[in-house]
Image (spheres, rainbow, N blue to C red):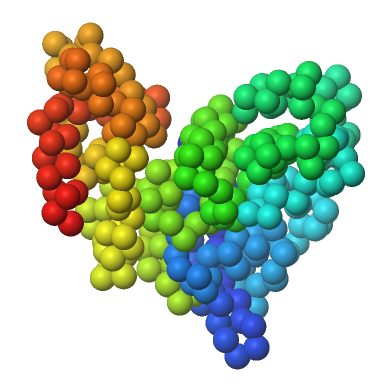
Length: 322
């Protein structure tokens, strides 16, 4: 992630009649960042997302896109630079999987050979064999498969920005977790700026480089997952974080333990410990913990610390008492 600004809101408001959906929003999203907007229904997060690609126009204030006022850019040019993933997947039903993925690259007049290679690479990236899936229609796919295609279609045209509006909220927990991991994997490889909207603080903590918490059309806090967890700006943010607990302790992400300070510093003697990613769960790490007594935790391709059996037990006791 760079420090270059990708999207900047300056005193942006959006009204519907007399009501403010978004009020005096000031926010800078950095290029290459996975930024999550989280809030309850009606908080203004989806309206904020839609103003980025001008599905909704601002009432007042200015949005800047790589330093240029958004409303000065030709609309078609702007939208060709952005991918969009919705909860309602909206694949074109009369087009094959390959044709759906190729659509934006073709509109951008990318070379045919490059498009074909890109379609195959992206399908392989999400575990869908091109020989099997490329000629299928969306109706031949499961819900999870359709959503995978929807995600890679958004990235196929090499967009600078990808907007994701609650894309996983209708999926079962297993599919949702798989697609969260997939989103992180694609983001790390392609380094596009992602603006992700969710009502689920657990999802926000799992995905976001930074998180913006919205309430009643206003941004009440912006920070890293650690900052949100350890220094909530107000009672609303604190309650949102508390509500992110899952009832299934084995489904808790290791990132949660990192955020809450349960990891210990690494020492020279830890070199042989197995490594797990922070987007894996307690259930996945338990067998290795039982064998080795501790494991190393990798966060965004850098080692964040080690988790010991004793620290996990302390977390589990606190979890049970909440």
